[in-house]
Amino acid sequence: MDIKQLRTLLAFAKDESYNKASQSLNYSVSTLVAHISALEDELHVELVNSKGRRSFLTDKGKAFLPYARRMVDLYDEAYAAMNVSREVTGNMQLVTSETVARQMSRVYKNFTSENPDVNLTVRIGSLAAAQQQLLDKTTDLIVYQDFAPPASSYITAVPLYRMPLQLIGSPKHRLAAKKAIYPEDLKGESFLFPRRQYIEQPIIRDVLKEAGANIGENLFMDSGDLVRGEIAKGLTLSFMPWSDEDKHVKEGSIIQLPWKGEEIFMTVYAMYETNTLLLASIEAFMEYCKKLMGR
Image 1 (tube, rainbow, N blue to C red):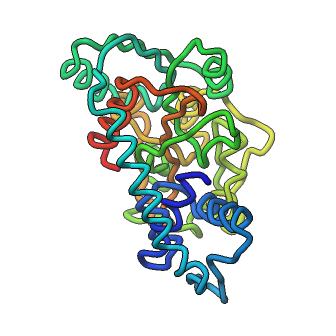
Image 2 (cartoon, helix red, strand yellow):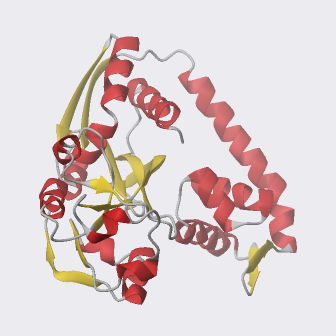
């Protein structure tokens, strides 16, 4: 029985709302539904039922709640007991994306200042390569943005914080003069993304297709910097993470456009090998990230 599934059920039960549970746990609604579905399969009972847009606990779900709380409390108690004397020291190898590295520069500096016995090495790399390095034990932790946690039983993903995707364009773009931009304003506009995964997300795909926007489904640039370069030329728009440290931002060649449609975001996850005993330094680093980045 997975502790994440139990935490999901408890979070859902608080308001009987997947959306509110999603906000508190930083998992997508589809991931939460999968957690509860897996728990139901293991217990051979229905814990949550849905009628129309409303979801609610079944009688079996309500009956199971006290057991779920006891198991989570016991897990937390045991975890704390095993970690009470562990020291935050040693070497830590971390792989991340360029975007996350920019956003978390103060986290790295502050964490190592407050924990001088930790030697932190941060490398930039692709998510696929980083996951293989994790399994090869050549890195200790991945901190990466994605729309959902990895579908791997070998890798555990812990949500750290939400990364909003901003509508980004050139200050010379026709939409830059508008005080508010809605989906219908995107009709005929061209969009470019770093990965196909972006346009496979329903929230992005549906907004752009309904607006009649031109999605570059055959062209992707595996670099946020390259995409921002095309945006700076005024050739395209994109929904992307924003960083004040980006060179195009500093030059003023790209700006945030005032998007008023539905919020679009990714989640930044800390990922580690499931069957590895976590170093105290890694656990401390993850908690530090949550605190500073505002989970």
